Length: 196
Image (cartoon, rainbow, N blue to C red; front, side, top):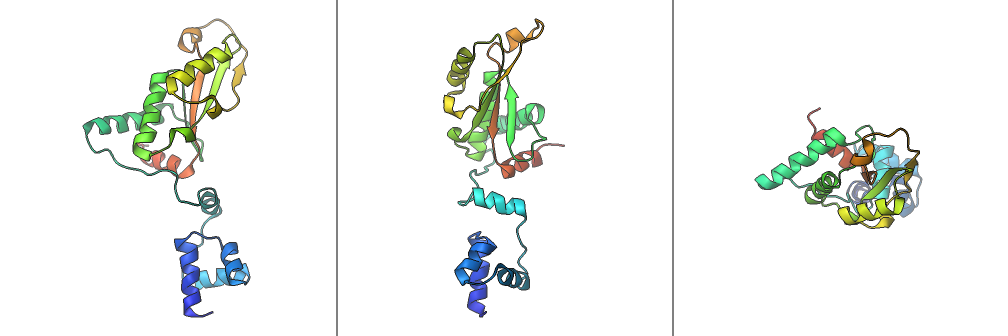
């Protein structure tokens, strides 16, 4: 293989994020041959999780991180990180997840994601958890109005049988909603910004 071909392999793999199998098809050779030249050029192979991420995000990251530019933005940034630290599900390795019964709190977190990571609101997903004595349609109507989202953004609801009377009736009259954004890199970036 000549120098020009080796340079092209490097551009395709590193620059254009093509897979080894895609490059092998372009050159009409085996994947082993492409792997050999990548190793010879000192190009580190992507992990399986990196390869899967690229496959699902062929145009690059679906988010773009920016830092706060003023005091008001710094306050929102701090609140967003604080909410994720206190209320978020950090055990999930592939997705950003935060649940609460307070619509105002969820709106702050959503604003944080949109402002500093340029997430599109339509790409967020939601999960509604209600008790059997809560009217499901009324709960959906409440959250759709308060969060300014569409019903299609919800996963199938979780309905739990009502137990003993408790204070939950006042606190979660419309259930609990979890906001989801499925992206491992963004989840890792948030975790990296927490003082753990």
